[in-house]
Image (cartoon, rainbow, N blue to C red; front, side):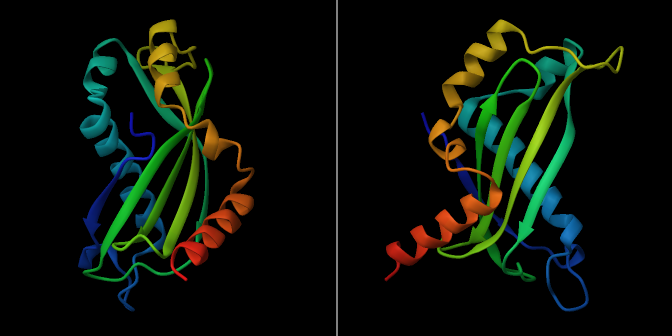
Length: 163
């Protein structure tokens, strides 16, 4: 199973600042939407099935580092992975790169918390969800340390790969 799905997106004019750079806040939208697409396209995960059962996830935190600007009309590749799952949260990583996947634009780590839609309160993941999520958990990437360690590792990998 592909634990690092990726897909391409075109940077839209309305998402850019006056310099033609993707607006910082819009990176969040592109990265979150890409993860949603990856869940549907690569894992056949349907959020609606969970919503019908009053389960959803809220963002507990984001940690994002902007490395190179994404530019108007540029095609970018976005990769996502599930770093860790437990009964109380999901820890995700999303990376925006250029189309050739040899330059990082931004990298984000997010913590999502499951909630009951009726009560608005935190709920544990059920055993069925945990069993499924463990099949796509990417412990190899998760073990590469904090975000700054991960960036250093990716930049080193890119240099080795393209020299």
